[in-house]
Amino acid sequence: MSLRSQTVADVCVTIVCISLSLFLYKSRSSAGGVTYHRPQAYLLHNQVTHARLLPVNASNAFTYPTLAFLVSISALEGRFLDLGRGWIFGYGGIWGRVTGLRPEPYLTKQTGSIKSKLEDLLRARGHLDEKRSLHDAWMMTMPSFLGYEGINPLTVYFCYNSEGTFWSTVLEIHNTFGESHIHVLEIGKNEDSNPPNGYMFLSTTIHFLLTPMAPFRYNHQWTFPREFHVSPFNDRSGFYTVSVKRPTHPPLFTDITSSQRMPSPPKPSVRVHLFTSEEEDSSKVGALKLTALLRPARSTPLTSHSLLFSLVKAPFELLLTTPRILFVAWKLHYKKRLDVFLRPEPHPVAYNRDLMDRPRPTKPSGGVKWLDEGLLEYYARRRIEMFLSTRARETGIEVAILAPDPGMPPLIYSPDGSASPIRLTVSYLSSRMFSILCLCPSAEHALLLGCEAEKIFRVSSKELFIAVFSSTTPPLPTTIPDLTRLQRLRSANIPGSLGIPIPTSHFLDEKDGFGSKLGSGLLIFSHQFLDWFEKWVFTIVKARVVEGQEPWKQWDRVADICINGCLTVPNYLQNGSTIGSVIRAA
Picture 1 (cartoon, rainbow, N blue to C red):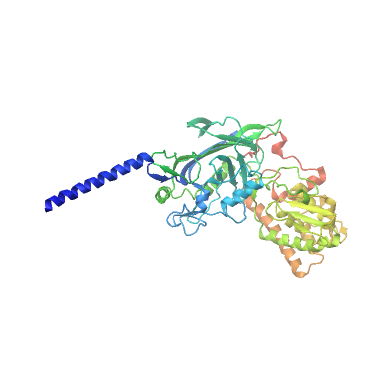
Picture 2: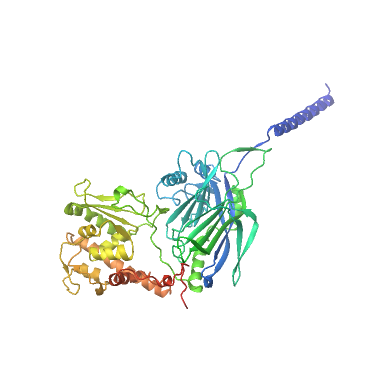
């Protein structure tokens, strides 16, 4: 065969091979197409809008951009979403990577994955059973950036079962104190009818205008009483109405062929309205007070390119959440003249009836994280625990101490290691209770301050409480100077008008050695200094607390109870106002 003939043959074979390849490709495409994987993580460029309508003189509105992730928690914890070998984005930590997510800041303090903690919470609250399961969930949250982890004011979980059916939304709310609260909003359960259209809020110097946005509807809406303290410029009254636009598709891992339509990138939206209570009936929804809207302007699959491009374009979006919160707080307090409501203790959770001498009338709280105890509170708690370990045997009274966090086991002190027919149950909302027991000169003072005035703890029996925490030394009139030095320190800021006898020594001091008494003295000095310093700081920065909530006036509130039999109604509530915010005149 000549060289020319061989060349022609090679060209013909090449053409045939190319034609056959094109034919097979088209045949495959017509039969099912090229297979793609549906993304299990998206980058959300959100617009967040807040607007305050009440009080009218403090009206305010602002909008800012945020960057958030929408990720499948199963894919996240399977490390299928890590980018750049976990350096650009990785699960399990925040250091040594540009962005990251880890389970510790989310939901409860218990160890475990985000999914396992979410399952435990849903099961404990009766939302998981044979008919309802958690197969996967979209998690909408903000990641850490260069090791910095913000407070993440709102994390949303869109929960799906194994069939890919969306069945609940879980809102995880964080405040700046390190506390968090969840709301489980189940589809078809206590749900409002006819979810509304989306709205945007435009602020002017005179009023707020509600203008319809681009056409979209919320899929679901719920209304429920407010329970969690978030803003220092509102009390804890009122109602939330939460409207949710769910993601376009479930996070389940599935393949899509080129002949099928790729689902639109999900743009889940959440709108929260805060309503006041009606003046005539506090159980009914009143006027609209605040509104917040989180709405993605753009949603793209989470890739190394999309993430790095977004960070280069707006490098500070993940760092500005806390500064924005502080700036708005400064504006509302000093410019709009709104007074500060001090942080109330979270609502109590329901305990096992076997541990309570009487059932608690309130429903379980949605609290999942509580404020950690400080060093002084830890020392006070250890002192009380050591005291009760012997006091129960001396009095024959069993003492049960119940913490606000249901994940913490109750502390039970029995006379002989077994159950006693005489039982005192003390349930507390804050570890401050242990400090009150150490700082008050008598059990009667502790009851008035912690149980009646500040409502830090509750007791099943006041008589048993006094029997357990009373000194064996006889009480003396407050004018007699025969008190121990520690008792004089404890009584220094207590007004004599209370008329409550003070025992010569404290129940903790009677059997203590020099070291323990020195520790008690340092504890008392430290608290008195911090009380003085707190008042000094508020005075220097000209911060204003709502009248009647000043921490340095706690014994004035006790005196009010002793004189009037109850606390005086705060001025901002005396005229029947239900706004739940206070403007101080200039």
